Length: 248
Ligand SMILES: [Zn+2]
Ligand SMILES: [Zn+2]
Image (cartoon, rainbow, N blue to C red; front, top):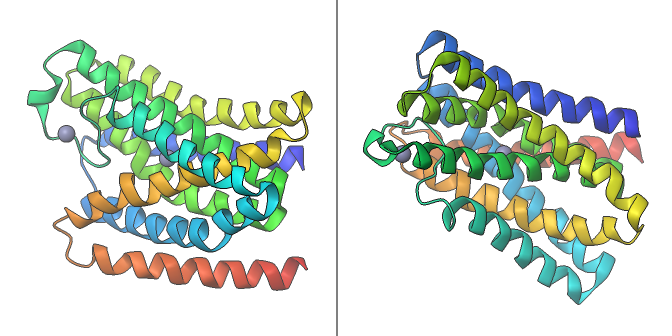
């Protein structure tokens, strides 16, 4: 299982770095690709959180599960939109917010923390339950390309040199992998931690789907993007049904 966790964690890390490289090297923004991958990823992860992660968290650790879900949601809110004044997924077109170096580094920090929890979610999901872990990986993988694109876009909008952008986007990618490793170490400290962290990352997933991704899709000029959210939900149902039939 550890090998699979490392391989899937590395896949998500690479997807993030590829997303960033597309922007750094081509300097073109594939708007439709961004909107559709965000929309599918949003529908997929929201369906996963509501139908699997939340009920499973409460079943596993009882009422404490509900509190940890809220804590997971609140933690991302703190790091992405409280400590960091300006952060959204998608192309960074608001250069006026990035006049100071601190502003771009604060967005970088918000996405760094976000990526860390993405990685933790993949690994904890797989530790907790193989099927749920694979579904969590799919949900997260779908938004890793646009996430990498977002990081690169913020850095280039704030006038960073190509080499600085490359180093910083690689760091956000590596934060994903650090999250994977942290989740591998946690159960060694206390086996109980897996259940608690599972509930926590359910709240993180809820934030990613409903607060990071959906608002971006709803503001998009791509008319079909909001409809594609339903395709993400349908895709989740198909993938979940397939995995349950194949694995059990
Ligand atoms: Zn902006
Ligand atoms: Zn993410």
